[in-house]
Each structure stands twice: as structure tokens, then as C-alpha cells.
Length: 474
Ligand code: MN
Ligand code: MN
Image (cartoon, rainbow, N blue to C red; front, side, top):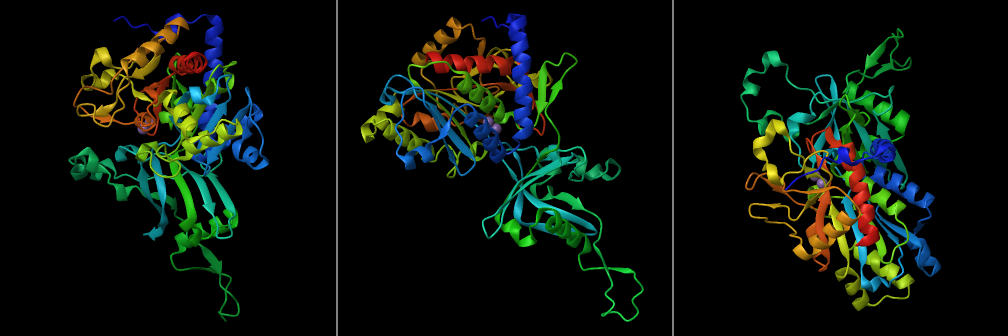
């Protein structure tokens, strides 16, 4: 089968739109480096577009009608948004879903220690990472510290030009003979991913009362470097060591999303898995015209660790919000809810492994996703004989194909690497439990799960177009 390169298909007007969308996409990445930050950005954006919070409408007992736009946030980490269509909800929705969590290093609950003059924060990595990729990079800390009284300190250090950054050290090459012989999985082990956060001891004035021979000199306190860091945390952020107990601090690569290549055809950025699909889904949702069916977009947390927890896709959060929406439409019954879900169509989005010529032997060329090849569909994902996959129905794929061809959306189909080489999962199988039509789709990425991942600007734009076509036509 012949594949088209998406860049060849655009006219001047589209290229202009493509650049605009990708610039906004980079802003989204820069402002949303954690799931919480993504939710902040998303809620601000959709509220400006007329979306109203579902819970507020529920407590006011408001009625919903065609054209209304509502959203619901779960624990500041997941969101579901709806634009009410003409048809009853029980006839099904068109749903876009993606995840907004990304691999990173999470700061432990008792993290701060001093060792030979360095202060460290101990971390536990989140999601699948090649640990050796995370050393000797400038790192930033993003997150929240929630104090006992319920007040939240928002932390974002390392992104501004005059902010300090943090780093993980690596053994110098001169002494690395033995280290270089180790397997890549062992070169840097999980417990070695502690970030260096200080090297200067805290000095305090000798007090005149305590020391008769006070000479104005300063003296070191015990574990003075750690004490120095704590002093700064107290001074600048108003929290104490104990407050790490109720903190969620995420260590991510410091720096902004960049255009890549002489031709500026790509985006190199942290966290594109899966904020590239989240962003394009969100934009499609905002730009969607009048719809027959209710359209919906869910952007969730915890995909990278199995969609677990209250904010992951396995949570009842989404189902509950559908029930609330139906209730405000005067349509709710247990049976109508089940019908709404089972009659829905969904694009479950996630990044796909882009074919990498440097590692070509791990892919099967005819069934690989290519950067610039357009939006990707994966009939199935999984590993070892499709295990763990949602295997989309041929009938549903035909329906989607028809829409995409009619709307001139460039797409490609792919598997994640060669058979038996590896694999991966997404949220698709969870929504499929309702008996709805679901297919995995998304954007091809190079160096997936690395601190800096690459995508094609053409794919970002084409995927946005594809999502919009799906919402309007499926
Ligand atoms: Mn992933
Ligand atoms: Mn993903």
C-alpha cells in the first residue's frame, strides 16, 4: 500500500494553520509539565470557551440542553468534558481520550538527605524509563506541597532562565571501565536516581550569649548542607521537611519545547507521550462545530502505571460524570447510561512508536508508523500475541476509514514494533469494557519515554484535523 507524506498535501493556508497550532502546542507543553499543570491549563482554556463545571450545575440543579458545554475534574489530575449534541445521550457519544501523565522521577515522601557535602532528594521513577537517560541533564521540580492546614504550595523551579536547576551525577568516563561493562538496565539503577539539590553549608552567627569569645565568625550546624536547603525551602516556599510527607513533587527535564531540524519540521520536547494527543484532542473539542451526537473528551492520569487509582482510566470517575450529565438532561436511568456508553464511538489516543532508521531492525517496515505519515491507527496494541490489547473491530475501522477519506485526513496504520520484540498498552481496553467501539489512534513519536521526545509538526496538525472530523462525523 502506498503511503503519503503529509507535508506534500498542504497548501499555504494549511501550512500557516499548522505552524500556529504547533506554536500553541509548544506553549501547552511548556505550561503543562505535570498532570496537575495540564489540568490547570485545560480548565482555564475551556472555561474561556464557555465550558461550565458540572458539579456547580448539579448543586444548582440546572438543566442542560443542546449546545451546552460542561466539564468535570477529578482530584486535579483528570478531566472529562462534554458538548451536548442534538440526539439523546442514550444514542451514544463520540469520545476522544488521551492521557496527561508522563514518565518522570517522583520525589519520595522522606527524600532529603546529606552525603559528603551534597544535599540530595531521593526519587522513585514513575512509568517506564531508561534510567541511564536521566543523568547529567538539567532537571526541574514541579508539583505541590500540601500542608497540614490544607494550604497548597505550588512548586515550579528550574524553568525560568534565572531559576536554579537540579541534576543527577554520573561517574566520569576516566573511572568508568567497570561501569561501562554493565548491562544498560544496571548502569544506573533506580536508587541511584537521586537529584543533587545543594552543596553549600548553612552558617549561622555565633551567638554572643552562648559564646563569651564571640568573634563574629560563623559556625556550621549539623548536616549543614541539608540545613541550608531546608532554610531556603522555609524562606522561599514556606514549607518544612515534614511537609514532604504530603507533597507530590515531580522531577522533569528542565527547559522548553523546541522546534527541531534545519527545516523546523519536528518538535523536541518532554512529555509528548501523551500530551500530543491530549492537546490535539482538546483543540478538536474546542473547534468542533454543531454536532448531532454529544461529543466528549477525557484526559486522564496514571496511564503510564496501568491506569490505576481514582484519577486513572479504570476509575468510575468518567462513568459517574456521564450519569450526572444525563441526569441534568432529564435522561438518566441505569439502562440509558449503559446504552449511552455501549453505543459510543471512541478514539483512544496515545503515541505510537515512530519508525527509527537507526533502529530499523526492531520495526516491521510495512506496519510501522512514520513521522510525517499522518495520524496513526493501531488496530491492536499489546505484546506476545496481542496480549493486553483492545483489538478494534474491522466494521468500526471501516466506518472511521470512510470518514477520514471523505474529510481528506492523511492516516497510517501501525503496530508497535516487530512481532515478539516488545509491546505496550493504552487505555483503549478499559473503555471497550462498556461494549463501545474503540480504536487506538494517535501520533508517532521518536525516542518515546526519553527525557526529550520527537514528533512531526505535520502529524500534530493532521491528528488535530482527524479528531475534529471524528467528533463531527462518527
Ligand atoms: Mn507511555
Ligand atoms: Mn502513552
